[in-house]
Image 1: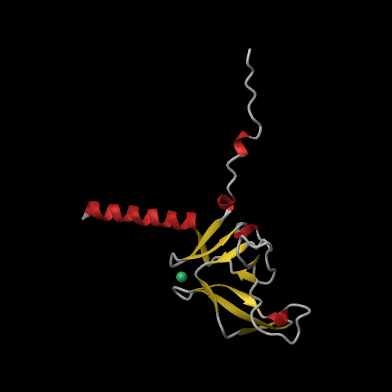
Image 2: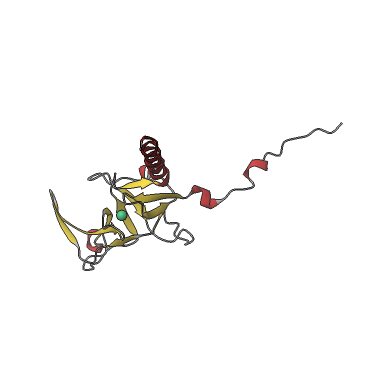
Amino acid sequence: MASQEPNPNGSSTSTNPAANILTYHCLCAQLSLATTTALEDLPQRQMDAAAIATVGDFASPTRPTLTMQALSADVAATVLKLDDGFEKRYVVRCSRCGLAAGYHLDKSQFGGTEGQSGPQADVVYILPGGLLTTEEMMAGRSMEAEIGKVGLMTA
Ligand SMILES: [Zn+2]
């Protein structure tokens, strides 16, 4: 009598790290970035609800949470006047349409690096509402397709 024990590890043999990567698009549909954690699950900056992510190659040992695709930071800093002083930022934009997706802070905003300036490029703040997940974009696309079909039928 053969008893067939289900292999407890049977379902986890095909673990693919790429399956946990989420992709986000600019409103112009350009692929902007990929993350290992949904933007809404990342730590948030209190002042503007921006998602705080570490930037780099996913294969690197620093285990970054975000890889930028078609995004580039402004060369010139933008200085913001805040209640308690100033903040120097480098706006990160879609390299296709120029829409701001987030920003880097200046190195001088971080403790222990006084006297240095330039973007702190390994940390990015992603502004809320500026990006679509691939899923949301596809949903928008299929809606457009539906509208297109209706248009064809009535034409
Ligand atoms: Zn864009």
